Amino acid sequence: EGVGPQEYTLIKMRAKTVPAALKAAGNKPVFLVAATLRPETMYGQTNCWVRPDMKYIAFETSNGEVFVCTRRAARNMSYQGLTPAEGEVPVLAELTGQDIMGLPLRAPLTSYDTIYTLPMLTIMEDKGTGVVTSVPSDAPDDLAALRDLKNKAPLRQKYGVTDEMVLPFEPVPIIEVPGLGPLSAVTACDALKVQSQNDKEKLAEAKEQVYLKGFYEGVMLVPAHKGKKVQDVKKPIQKELVESGQAVIYQE
Ligand code: A2H
Image (cartoon, rainbow, N blue to C red; front, side, top):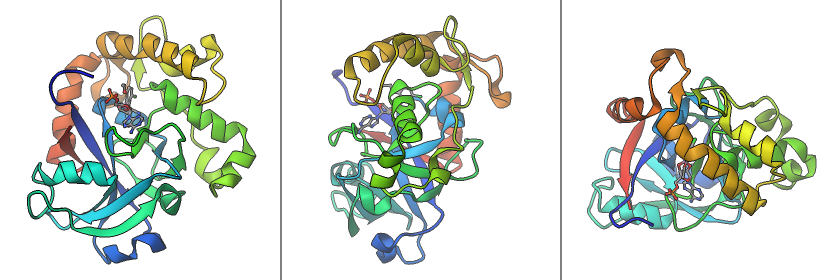
């Protein structure tokens, strides 16, 4: 990794219903918080990823909201002014990813009114918040994991997610990438014949093709920013999300 701290945008995904494991939250609004480097892609969110076997916590923030993420990330947040007392995390509940699987969420900027938490098995414990937002149009890992769930009914059953949480959701064209079209991750994964979320080598190659080009040459397709370069809208979109209370800045 790089030398300095990495800055992420934490996307606040509001739980539309509160599961039994989160009853300690009472009436406070509950958010799953996903760390992203690409806030301008939030127009293309189709779901939220959690890892079924991973441990998460719910804690109360300095403004009376409840955030769900890994304990490690919450500890970092406690030194970034996000908890009531510096260095202290007021834990409300301990959970596993499975406890919050299939949760309906309202997420910023996406055209889908409700998206769901779904299982991704390759989420790393020591990066970001352990909650990942899914943009299958522009992220090969997200596309591969979504396709796994779409193609494999037994996988959906294993983690208790229903057809309705998965099948209606398709990659949304949000960024045109020269040579890769309006669904760059789809183009790359199809060309390389990526087989699943565990197809490490091909996914690494797909990401190499998609990420740099997407960021440096991508042009926005969404009406609000149509024709603008990805590079030029990233910061303004981040700012808009933060100022409207739909995101916070997080570093690690
Ligand atoms: B990005 P970096 Cl569209 N485990 O968000 C695995 N992946 C994780 C993670 C974790 N614990 N935490 C965050 N991520 C993903 C969007 C996106 C992202 C797009 C394109 C590129 C991209 C939609 N998913 O990242 O190792 C998140 O996916 C390019 C690397 O800290 C996050 O941003 O550089 C990115 O990896 C952070 O990865």
